Image (cartoon, rainbow, N blue to C red):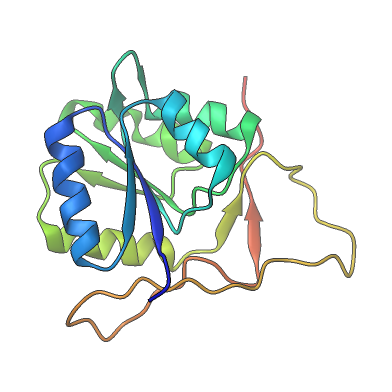
Length: 171
């Protein structure tokens, strides 16, 4: 069985543990961290099929993570931000910075499953690189990563031959 790493960035240990259990049940290998710094350290050395990032983290937030990811770069895969109802007003900012999808807490396992499928079916973004097109004939990633859920006949691709650049940094 191939390794299917995913990054979970959640400050609350109980929710981090719950996410770990669900993701392992679905065949993933979750790497759980509790801060933006830990997430960026993991991204410096690993690639992920997708990332689940809490909007509210101790001392910082998911928006700070997106800002810092633009500078550092990395391959988090599609980024799904988990948010509480009071954070709804910040979703537009997070989307403009490159978040791929959003899921309101609390959520049901099937809602998480559907959100992962949706996010992973989109074109995979490249973080921390120039937003200009690569030179003609330049190699692009062609690996295909497909989340597979028990009892599900649909497969979503988390990466493909087309790669979208990350949004241009804003001031």
